[in-house]
Length: 252
Image (cartoon, rainbow, N blue to C red; front, side, top):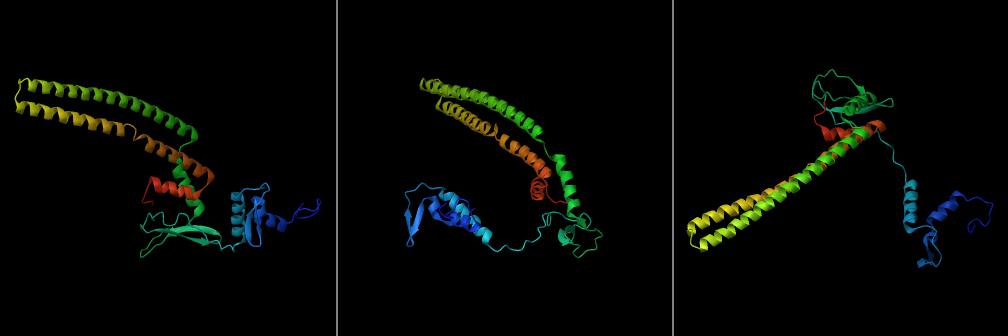
């Protein structure tokens, strides 16, 4: 109403542009080039106002000419001569072919749709559905919990052994002070106990570190196979390429 002056007149594009570029709507105003805080209730947030400015700026920019993106170029090598596979645009279609650099190769062109179908078929062989992904992760979690339980039991057992060694060392000192054994015997036996204790302590650290270290990599691997399933369903060629690069190399 404040801009149009009439209730029945719809807002024009310029009216909306004015609203989206006027800081008054997020609670401030300019007067003679200086910014002041308003006492009125803001209509929008400063964050939303800034976002609007960015969108209008991008829409107002000159759009650069779109160039064809060859997603699979440089990914594979020719199965006949071993040269890299390149791509080019012909009559609105993307074709992949061997570069045939410094060699006589009989391989012909293949359209991107056909190549994508081959890749889709390959990925489907190793991808996982949501159901199977959930089942496997559930089993992995059970195995992890069992591993942690076994680890805890093992650590408790080793802690008891360490306490036993401490007790043996204490008794060894008493025996030596009583004069029952020589200094050399005392030192040799004490060294044996200390080394045994150190090995147990290091074993506890290694066991604690290794008992759960496998879980995250295993879960990440399974979820990556599940993401591949979605990449295939959605027809996202870039995601499919990324998946291929993760699970293999030297593509032919």
